[in-house]
Image 1 (cartoon, rainbow over the protein chains, first blue to last red):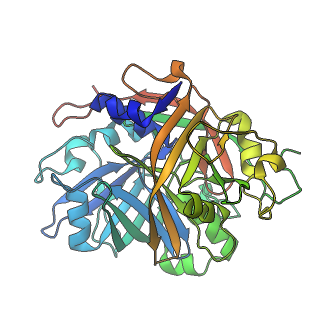
Image 2 (image 1 turned 180 degrees about the horizontal axis):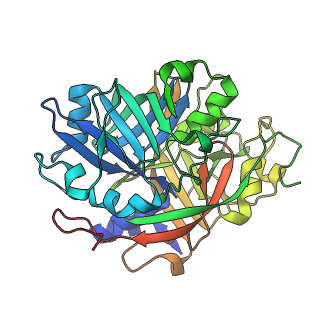
Image 3 (image 1 turned 45 degrees about the vertical axis):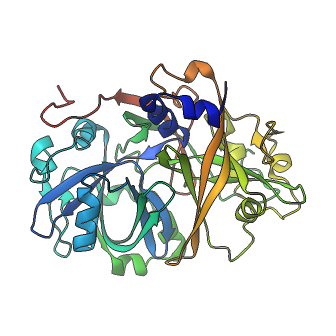
Length: 208
Length: 208
């Protein structure tokens, strides 16, 4: 099947959204916790969290265009911090429900039945049920003029997880934590490890 | 287990790299095909491809700092185009081997045993073995001063995939294509769908 720009441009809007959202491959599933300057808690599902670098420990999120209310982006701008909470299989329905357009005065925590939890240092709420929780401070907002999205770059300053799932080499076994992967807008997947492969070097095939 | 910035800063380098690379969750696995202005083919494994928007159809990649040779980035700057080829389970070892630091005059296609394939319109090579292949033109390079990475933003102009895997609503069944998810630097995972959930609305739980 071959599709060109012309085919993309003539797709019905909803079809196109579903189609293009699957093309990049599997995505991470994270709930982003924030609080407004007057203390209202917000929780939003993001499938765009991406590793940007290990030192400093940077993570990026894509926020959609601020044409309608973007509570997460507004709260991050106002408070300078946010949390990123990994979604595991038992949390999928509640996490997905957070993508509904709740009014500003509704806390998604209450609406979907998840529990806010605070560390000693960060004013943004974590999700108590999550098994891998990151606290971040805002480092940069990068506006993307091409489609009016905003790339939110945060530095990880706190990590809460299960020590038993952190290997001797630092690898966190997110499959052991039952983290899910996302495809498209609405499909959630458990995983099964195929392999961990050694550091690749020229002339030394990992296939051997 | 609680880790702070202090703990991150005192981790051994390799441990820290493994650790932080797992924190964002599952990542996509794509081989990026490019060609230099003098015709040398290059293939590189990226786990940072992220959906940026459906209309225009934008995809972003993170390129590491250009301190050493970054053939992919150089080729994209020189030619203005690249391909993104989804990695499936049977391709994992060959794809991972592409992350070895081959010299500029070595084609990773030859080195790892994958097959270059060209469309009628794009001068960058596709991976014939991939079951979901995207052709992109460069739209913007966004330098990230915080860690000297570069965010490469491309617009999808061609898509090659199996028509049987594209649903009536436009959703591409990447699990059916056996696409893999990545965690950390070196772990590859098959997936098993938990659920596709309906569009979430306030007051109407998807859990019901």
